[in-house]
Image (cartoon, rainbow, N blue to C red; front, side, top):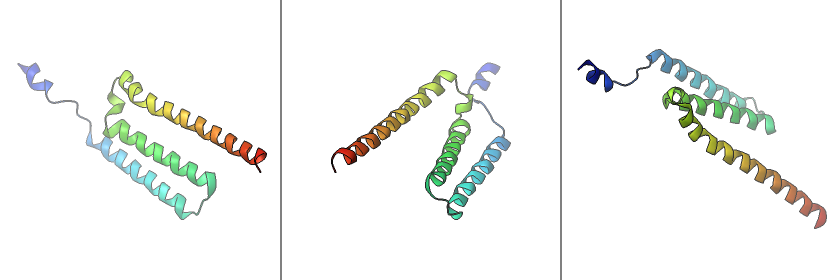
Length: 108
């Protein structure tokens, strides 16, 4: 009978963990804001903004969506398809640059 009462309770995580992650998200958001405040330009600006955005998204998915405690197969099933799409999009962007440059060279 004791097993039936504990099966519905679920896994509990300490509130301190969530507060620490919230604080870290606040710090990362502040750093993202400071990138614009510092008037950084070009690839440095976008690289920092994207890195901070990916870090925030990773923290949210890992802790608040409980992915850190899931089975590895489920994590792979969720993370691998978007990573494959990013690789394919970067390959298309490189091909687009090559096509644009060859058109500039041959069709002046």
